[in-house]
View 1 (cartoon, rainbow, N blue to C red):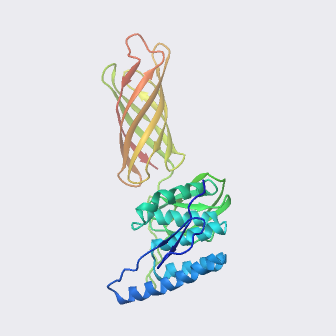
View 2 (tube, rainbow, N blue to C red):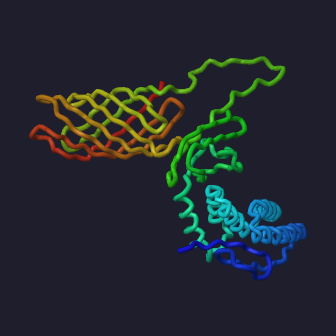
View 3 (cartoon, rainbow, N blue to C red):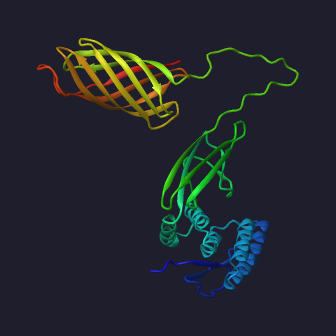
Length: 340
């Protein structure tokens, strides 16, 4: 079935262009400047419609964009998106329709149809999803219009290679590139690096020697509480941050039964409070090696750059336990991490 394509006019009802032409009534506004801007936008819209009907899509697009710049009505976005589709500029059209759907004043009666058109376009383009840390960066993808990033942001691009740049006052410029296929979604995590503070002119430069930023290595002390079998055990060892979200740990088990532990954690967030999931493999040496597996969920709270505390609820399963040991049991954990 053919998709609807909207071309909106500011007054009167006109022709049908592979879809529906809808008239919007003019509502007087209190601010005289707003009324003047809206009048000029209406005049541009009529010019754009004529160009569109004459199949001068490039001219119509430029005129619709001028109308939107004059008076930023979401209704004009549909005209811009429709014209971009006629030009086969699918990624730009998809971004325009997405912007329309995100607007608070978009027409509820048209949302379902616009969402359907956007889904059809998304099958032909790729979606780049990105976050910036900290928020507030200005991102440009493939020389498109600048995007202000606040939380997770989506941007459509044509299949192939894309380039992304980000700028934020007080931080070094960031750039990244990648390759995407039609219908694919790619995630980019933008980490802005702060610029060093410049010394005040005329004042002596003071160099402070301190601990500096933490490395990826650190020490870990954790307690596993087994209230049913043998009580609590202390694990002492080290860890390595493979990624800002992923760390691996290795520790020795000191308790009623000695052993070793190898595990990994994945942080769902990267701030001071980091919810985590973890997996691990404990092995106990008691009349031979006793192998097990552990899984848990918890939270890591950073007390500073070099120190954090964590608490975890989890369970362990022993594959070949001694006869007096329960195979599967709930074992919470508490611990402290010190980054070098």
